[in-house]
Each structure stands twice: as C-alpha cells, then as structure tokens.
Amino acid sequence: MSNNKVRIIVDSAADMAPESKERLTVLPMTVRFGNEEFIDGVTINHKEFYSKLIESDELPTTSQIMPMAYADAFKEALDAGEDVVVITISSKLSGTFQSANIAAEEVGGNIYVVDSLNAAIGEGILAEYALKLRDEGKSAKEIADTLTQERGNIRLVAMLNTLEYLKKGGRISKTVAFAGELLSIKPVVHILDGEVQMLGKARGSRQGNNLLVKEIESAGGVDFEKPLLLGYSGLDGTLLHKYIEDSAELWKDNTEDLRISPIGSIIGTHVGPGAIAVAFFKK
Image (tube, rainbow, N blue to C red):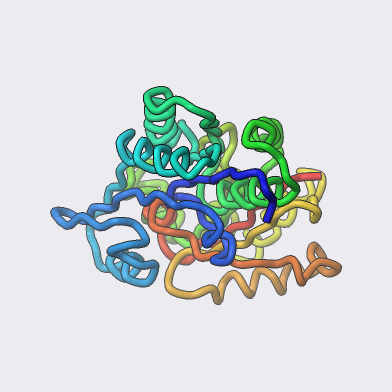
C-alpha cells in the first residue's frame, strides 16, 4: 500500500474481481421488482437476482445513488484524512454521476468525480486501474486526471443470448425480437461514448464469438499491461468458457491475466442471462 491516502469509491454497477472490490468502497444502487426493493449486492445477491429476473414478467427497475449517500461516504473519507476519487457508471445511463457531483460540491475538500462513460466490467477495469495508480503512489488528482485521459481507450463488447430483455426494456421492437429469436440471432453490443449500441447481429454463438474477436482486433488489440476482465450474466459462466476456448488465439500468451467477473443486476437487467462480455484497454 502507498502512503498517500486516497479512497476510491465506485457504485455497484461496476463489476470487478472480488479481490479488487475489497480494496475500494462500493456504494450500492437499488433494484426494484414490482413492490419489492432490494439493495444491490447487500439484500440481493447475484444468483437471487438472476433467478428473479428469469421468473419475472416485467423488468426490474434500478435507481441511482442519492447525493446524501455520497455525502456520507465523502465525509467519512475526509474525516479519516483521505482524498477521494469517485468513479461512476456512465452519466448517459444513470443520474449517479450528477449525485456524486452535487455531494462533492456540498462537502468540499479534495474530491474528484470521474464519469467512467461505461458500466459493468468496463467501469470495473477503470476502477482496477485506479487501484493500480494508487499503489504506484499517485495523488487523487493524478489518478482522476489519468482515468479521464484513459477512459476513452476502454472497449466493452458483449454478446447477448437473447433479445428478450432489450424488447422488455423497450430498446427494440417486438417484431425485431421475434425475427431474431426465430433465426437464433445473437446481438453483439458495445458501449460507445457512454451509451449501449448495437454493433452487429450474429447467427448463432460461433459467429457471435467471431464478431467479438473482430471487434478486439479492429480496436488494435488488447493492452495487457492494464486491467482486463471477462464477464457473464446469468447463473453460470458456461458460455463464457466456450468463448475463451474459441478465441484462444487472442489470449494465448496471457491466459494467467484472464479474470472473470459475473455481471451484476444493474446491467444484467438490460442484457438478460446468458450474455458474455469482454472489457479491455485498447493498445
């Protein structure tokens, strides 16, 4: 650990390796199924969430973190003599970034808020990079500046197993979803400028895996010096392991760097179970 005291705070939309999560402060968002409200990662865990999602006819709703929750976390850090770097889910996907800014202004002190312009494992690798910079002894301001500079190099690409949840969420029409299911189409999405966008449609998993590989290649390859995460949504990672085998060529010299994180409820709501994703810094 470095001597300079910097507390890194993320929201629970960031998915990352458990050993990284232990080293920063995670503020939970809330998930609501009908009248039932759960605190993400606290009163509902990963498996419970996906079991409920699969059974539920309606999509759950997720809500942003309130300024007050940030203010409390900031005061606690400042009282402990620490500066703060906050990393939030993309401001285009949630009002959480705004909440953090309101609280930072109110509390004052050395608090730096960084919009990850990402989510899930894309936000997660930015947080892991912040930990790496803190270990190197960088100040809160230096960490925030570097993250702001580097966030544009993050690529998050995912292959969805079904169009059902995009349809439920009103992001695609019923007709498109129906045609897609008939042709066993796997949508491939990515996050661009902070928003989820369709990258392509693949017939079946193999073609989908190829699309993921192509996207990595067209980004110029993976920067293995920086954090890299693979993710899956749903109850198990079988489909992800298949993808890793199919794309072995990409990772062959860096298999020990392959870390896997489940994709949590905040993004899981929109992609549904059975999605696989990769987040990396491009070269």
